[in-house]
Image (cartoon, rainbow, N blue to C red; front, side):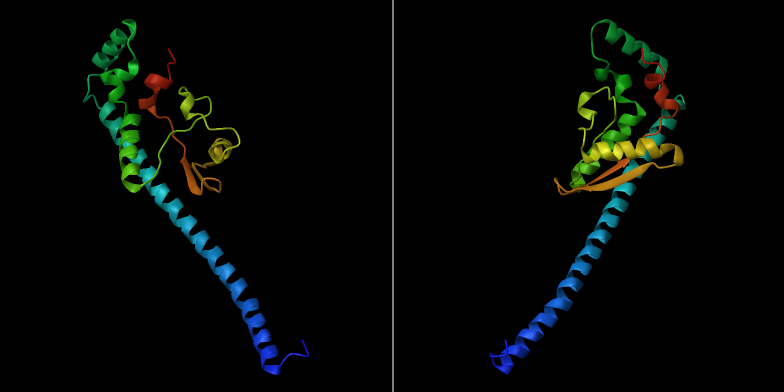
Length: 184
């Protein structure tokens, strides 16, 4: 290094000094920007799922208000099932409050370029079971263990898929008990 020209040495030292300052500063800035983006995405997902929950709650109020003849719908569903039909194809199934929320969410998610789905351990529909070891499985475990302490949302970045996964607990209310309170 001593055998090089003074101007070359000054240039190399300046470049080294700039790199020593710029690289860590840039890394710190990028890290802060990523954290801010993650917070923003989590806020957007929280707002999105809160609207879904509110839609379900509003439908439950209508359902429980007597606006629908639930007894008639239950009888009709019984007839369909006894005849070998699928309860998923009944009018009762179509007016379940949770489905109002899900359908609203699916439509809105599609418009916003988001994926919306249901995940549960021991799900009735095997497609809703999270893959063991996945980010969804991890978050669902966190929600389950923290629910008694008031934890109702969780999120994480799935690095493999390069997406944020956000989950909100679905809390069963009285409108859910027709199906979930009587497994038969």
